[in-house]
Length: 241
Image (tube, rainbow, N blue to C red):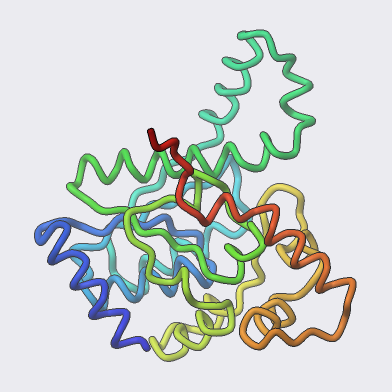
């Protein structure tokens, strides 16, 4: 599978920009690490640009630095903290109370992801790039991504792979264990992704891949999340006259 994805990336760039660079947001977690390593293998390190985007102080930012240094790729650090705060000020000046914005979980969790995608496309414009989407199948299945945020991008090497497969791919690429097994967290609540979801990725992957699950309540929750978030993974509906 690794070789197939590498060839797929090369084919994408042959068809969509022979001289283009790949631009990727680097968090230090498994998805961005595996995707970045695939890009380096497919295009060479000189054509891969990593962008680190902490929101204020990020306690695990060193993982991102370790990854770009390991791969030897060019990288930029763009702190989005002030931008997110400026948006709160601008929107509240437009008539929505600041306390309403800060109390709204959807706004507060999704806005940083959309700001980060804006940064990635800004860097991409400057360096004649194509933005890599780093989402995986498991997260997409239950909607654990932000529409027009981390779910955006120009090409997506991992979106048909479950978390289990992404991890296996990471080991096949020879990445250090710390990048592959880093516990994913949202960076806002202090909780892990699995805490927020209410089930493990192992259980989710098993259900996606085999249809098997041991807990009926968990099945119902996964099915409900999938139905509610189909709008994130299907093409935008459009009126046809």
